[in-house]
Length: 195
Image 1 (tube, rainbow, N blue to C red):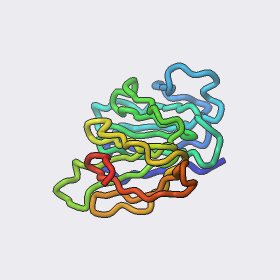
Image 2 (image 1 turned 90 degrees about the vertical axis):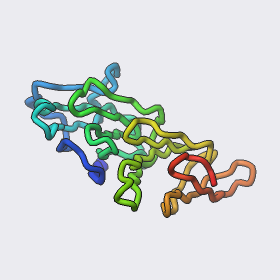
Image 3 (image 1 turned 135 degrees about the vertical axis):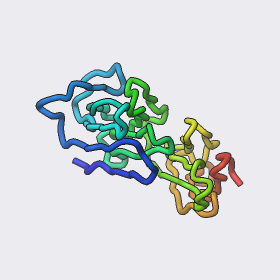
């Protein structure tokens, strides 16, 4: 089994425990993501979430259905730019969960997500521009405080590599079908457009 990742880089109003298996005694509050799934427990990511604020309610168990068993598909929990949300990824299936209202969630359309990157500006005055970046086979999806911020144009025919992020620009490579080579690209992280 792959050890799930945890990235709490953004400020967050919750604590989380990634469980090695489904607990024998279940908490009173339990949520399954997505809400309709066959055999969701088989290989699912089990996460015990505790909202930090009293009005957030008692802890709850989030059972996140497994996407793929491939080690290339990430599994873990990431803090998000909005401190009341968390991102749980189970074998490349990404679930964005509101911790005080866990019935509110987004099942990300990238299936699978191949990599998750947290980005926040080096400028402390602009921390609100933080993004959680989801890399798919062909494009990148950016999620910010207000939700989905942008989706890039096609960057690759099959697989994206990120080399670095510098000065608000993401530099990477994508495989080009016509030349059968990796082609470099640069994306403006504010707009998601190639520069």
